[in-house]
Amino acid sequence: MKKVAMFLAAVVLLSVFGVVASPAVSAADTGKVVIAVDLAHGENPKGLTDVTYKNETLTEGMLKTLTDYTFVYFGDPKYESDLGIKRLGDKITYEALKNNNVTILILGQPTSPLLPEEINAIRQWLQEGGKVLWVAGDSDYGNGAKTQQFVNSLLDQLNITNLRLDLASVEDAISNAGGKPYRVVAYADPWENTPKRELLVQNFKNGGKVLAHGPGVVAWIDGKDGSGDWHPLKADVKPDNAYVLVHSNSSSDITENNDPPANAYQAGEQGEFPIVAAQIVKVNDKNDVIIVSGETPVGGYEPMWASEYYKVKLDGPTVVSNILQWSLEMTKASEESNEGSGGGICGPAFIVGLAIVPLLLRRRK
Image (cartoon, rainbow, N blue to C red):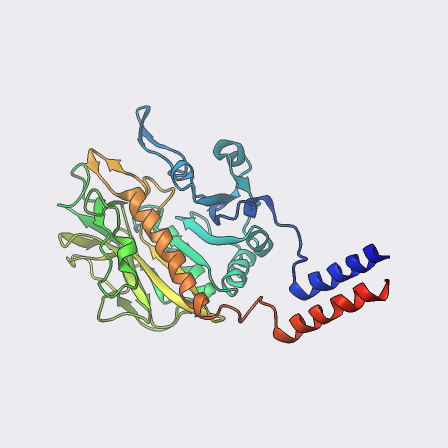
């Protein structure tokens, strides 16, 4: 009978301590931070695998390099064997994000719009707090103009950040790769007031240079739902808790390739322009980090991940790795001050649980 009592005691403790839970999915079994990459809306996986040129490996892929993370993806089943990572489905769902403990979601230059239910899924996931969403767009050249529209439409409907992509391109006749102004060489040089800035500028070998191949430019809008006036993103004129992480060189300029015209910047305007920016947003006493960029870390024609392009040495992998690490640190900032406020064991339940154990053990002596 003592065994029965022991079993009942264990059941009580499990129910009190909240240990009983549904089994974790394999993507989360490693205990590593899970990054989901969207490949369901016309994006490609370039940079997840090695970046090569004429059968020569120029940059080892994220899957080989970022071993502290577990990668999963949404999209075509063929990538599961090609990439060797878990597929979460044809489209983005809240259940897939939650059940696989996804912390970071990357949408790298979508060429088709997300479905309303996918946007709702991302919104629900973000409402949990402690998440990182990286939405990458493109220039307004060719089909890139549609990508800009898809990105801004998504951000409008998520209604969580003021950051947007303006309807223009950044080019640079001086700081570029191979002499082409659209192959912009930008710099990971965050604003000085960026929290934990040191994480974003560590381990550079090439001055923080990063490729932005035909990039768009980040701006901001008054309303997180897309309402109100547009503004250039500048250190002295910006929304709350927004920071530029990567900018173009001072020799760059704004170029218009397609209608409609830009909302915040003017064609021919010259200076440093934001290529990657982030806004830290408080959700349910936690921080979400929303990254909006005019170039993509993975996919695209040539991703930010590149470590060399037209013989220009770059810090692409380090820049992207630093941004991911920094983003995670920003999500943890508020959690540390709230430890014990959620998911912990409340005092009365703890006491009751301990009190019941000896009674159960004594009854069957």
